[in-house]
Image (cartoon, rainbow, N blue to C red; front, side, top):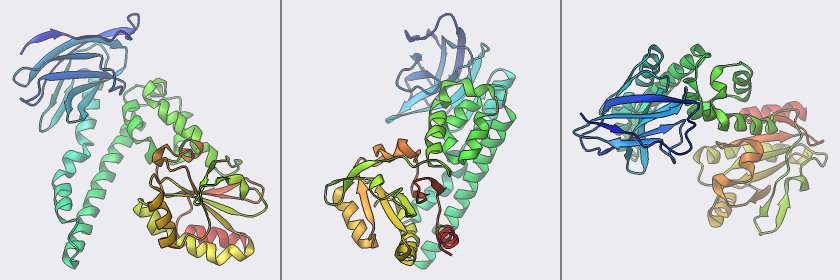
Length: 359
C-alpha cells in the first residue's frame, strides 16, 4: 500500500475544509482512485494512484460533504459514499462494497450495502435480459415472473433507503439518497420533507430536488396553467392558451412515441376523448419526441385526433421545467377558467373524473 497526496481543487473552501484520509481496495485493474464531493463528478477534488488494488489518499473538503470514492468504469464513475466528518475512512469496492469509519459512516455504509439493488438483483436481471426477447408463452411467463421478482427487490431496497432518510433527519447523509430518488416521491411527500427542518436540506445535493418541487407545484390542483409555445404537426406555432382556459375542460397530455407506458395509456385517453368531446372536452398532446417522423406516425397509429404540439427536444422539452415532468406519461386536467383541477390521471381514473364533471 502506498500513500499519496491528493490533488485538491482550487474551489475548495480552506476556511471550512476538513481533512480526510481514506484507504481502500479497488479492482486490481484500476490505476487511479477518484474522490468527488456532493455528487459533482465533473470536478473531482482529489485523485490518487492505486497499486495492486490498494490505495491511501488524503485531502480536504467542506465539513460534512458527501464524498464519493471510486474509479472510472467506461464512461461513468463507480463509487461508494462517505461523510467527510474528519475521521479516517476505509472502503472496499470490488465484487462487494464496504464503508467504515465513524459510527455514522458505519451506519451509512451498512445502508448502502443493504440497499444495493444491482448487487441483490444481478442474477435475476441477467436472466431477464436473456429471456426478454423470448416470445413463446413459456418465455413470456418466465420473463414476467423474473420482472415481478426484480420489482420486489427494487421495492425492498427503496424501502431501506426511505427508512434511513426518515431515521437520519439530523445529519447530512440522506442528501445523497434524496438526490438520487426524489422522483420516487409524490409532490406532497416532497413538500413534507422540505418543511421537516431536516439538516440534510442544507446540502447542495438536494438543490435539484428543491427545484423539482417548485416545478411540480406548477401542475398541482388549484394552480393556473403555465402556457407553452411549440409547433403543431404542420410546423405552425401554437400555444396551450389557444385551447386551454377558453371555457372547456382540457387534458394536457405529456407523452412520446418512444414511451411504451405512454402508448399503453393512450386507449384510455382516446376513449375519454371520444366519450366526452361532444360535451366540450378537449385534449392537447405535448410530445417529448425528438424525431418528427416518429411523432407523426405514432399520432396516426394511435388515433390521436386531438391537438398535438412538440418542440422536438426530447427531455429538453419546454414542458419539463414548466411542469416538473421527469417521467411520462403524465397529464394535467385544466378547468374552463384555466385552473388545474387534477394531475396524473391514469386509466379509469381519467374516465371517472370526467364522469363526475359531465354527470
